[in-house]
Length: 472
Image (cartoon, rainbow, N blue to C red; front, top):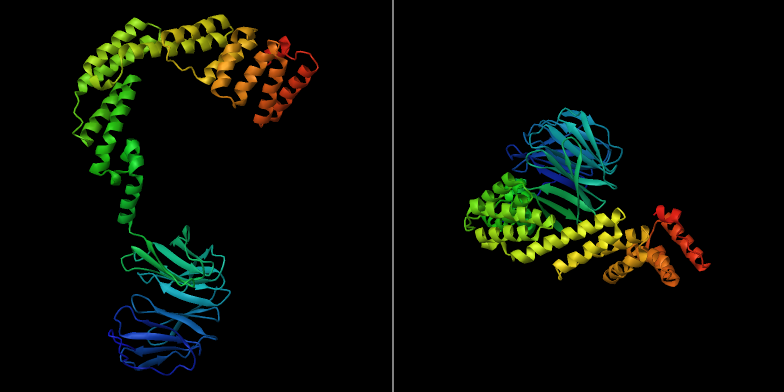
């Protein structure tokens, strides 16, 4: 026994072998128990006087002794595979049997109603204070060495020779496996406030794990800040992360979302977004009524553009810009872009229905309306494919080449050009395209069909009969 200044107060003798455990009563701190390899448990007062030697001894070494928080029960664990419950007078109350190997440790929940025990049988068992087995926790792959209840009694932490710490609820469900130690984990214990778990291992380290929900929440919000700023809807679902700084930074994104909603015709939800943005960041000064009217005009202009009405589209965009100069577009340019894109969509529909020449004209008209228009590879390939299917391969071969030039390694685009090449007499080029497709695709059926085309082309014959083309 030592005082807190490190001075030796008294040396207690009486055990005949190694002493494995010493524990004070947790209700008054006036009594402590010792457990020994001599198979005996002894009870002492804090002056070092021997009070009791428990006579109903274990049949093997006693590994640990622990008092219930109310001080009424002492639990001891032993290499004889049993747990014994005693009262303060040294009377044996119950012998708990259930473990199939030596029992390493025991700990009571803070309400004294549940006892948890660890064992070399790799399990943790939960018992009530009368000694009835409640649950067996199975999950560790090696001996379990230590167990600790969180102060609120909701979580158990178990330490094992499998180098892990596992967290369980009182119902015995595994919640989490903590990995970090590189060797046997000997002990795990929660801090009195439950915000920290300390674990000790044979790797010569002690690891502290953070269970402070408020701190973890703050860290999580910090880590998520960039995401939450660009996804304000997610921020709405995480009220605890709605700090003034994050809300203010997210407000412009909310404005953009509102603009998109109104342009799609969802005016009510768009207005809600605007109001939320203004609430989150009062520095965003704009006239809500004028902004909604301007965006409504933008929608009308886009609709006119889709109908290829350049004049109306331009006028709508100009009126919108007069109401909201922050829209950031040039009316004529935007109108031409929408008309041009509309013509491309019209061309694709024409191609799909076999009106290939009309489709080619629509593509040309789109480029004329907007010389800066970048038609996508997929749109060029679309015209190439259907133009070939409807026997206009010679007319659309230019579209095939444009698609390949933009995406030279796309198997589907090469496949489309291969058909057009075959139908226009470029046998060598067609074979090259089909071989590239065969190497590109993982579909066995498609590989087989293209290989058949290659083999047929090599014999000087054309595989693209009317029947074959109709099957494409």
